[in-house]
Amino acid sequence: MFGFPFGNRYGMRMGPSYTEVSDRIEIAVDEVADRVDALQLSCAAMWELLGEKLGVTDDQLIAKMQEIDARDGNEDGRMFSAEEVCPECKRRLLIRARDICSWCGHMLGEKPFGA
Image (cartoon, rainbow, N blue to C red; front, side, top):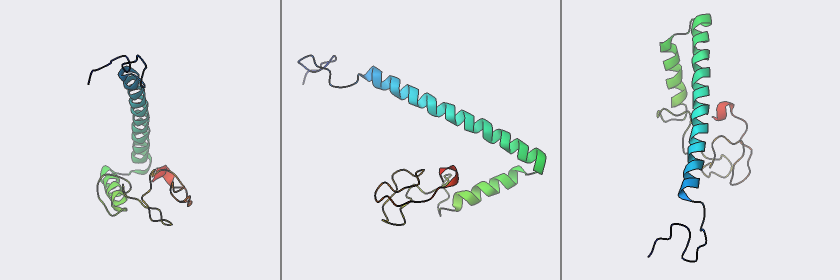
């Protein structure tokens, strides 16, 4: 009923403050942004090398991207389905990039790029 900004009515803190949570989120977002920037830079460099050294065109790249996108049966701009299932227990995988099912422990095998 009454707000207690510094804890509960007995003065005890109930968990991290909004500022602490916000700071953690900001750090996590910055780390993801850094990773995306690095991936963008490396993709741009690889693409320029493919074009310069092998003559690969933008149209060929787009066609290959569309082909890869369609492999999971769903052309949605993602590399794999959000509903990927374990071939052993048939349950939805919780973490797509892992090589083992979180439910039954079945080894899924390594996939390049976490695909």
